[in-house]
Length: 237
Image (tube, rainbow, N blue to C red; front, top):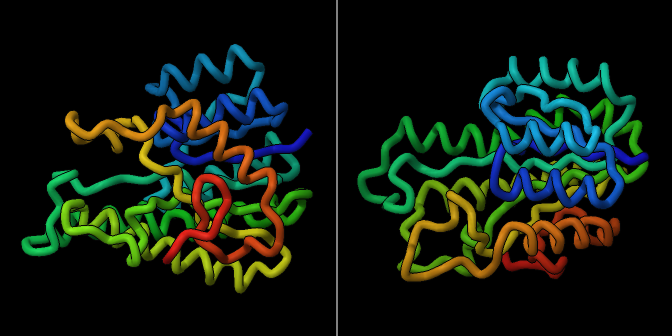
């Protein structure tokens, strides 16, 4: 049985990916900051005979490496790592470039950029033992410099996702025997994505995650280092 590890699994896309991979016959290692309060995740894992969720705060190196130790006790290898955990600015979606809150911006960057780098590092020994050797960084179309628009005032979040796209390339350059990609999930109806009641999201979590998992399953070495759309096409950086 193949194994997938997903960060930020307590809700939204993370929880949706957990459910979709269960349907696809994977062993799912779900992680989140506080598994005890993640009631939906806890019940999903229990009902499908999956391992209990592991505590992992991607903004804390101690938490990341402790989680890696815990995971190594329940699985011998990981085939796919999905770095999904992410945050937005505290005033999301009102996050202008003029008047940025330095401390809050560093919090976002620490979670959205450094988090995936350190998580990948910590779980690399288990990933090397897997068959698929795929690292997926959940990015955003708002992280595309080519697609930047003046109406989307998400300066810190967008900048963090643009940075994630860049570090994805460098991860791929170093991990030559892996497939490392950034994939944007489109505009999804989640707590993070549903910030404008007059402009609804493009799709629900279930549809997004079904397509996301399908795209991951079709990835090849030719895709490694690239920023991809939900359907696996190269997305402009």
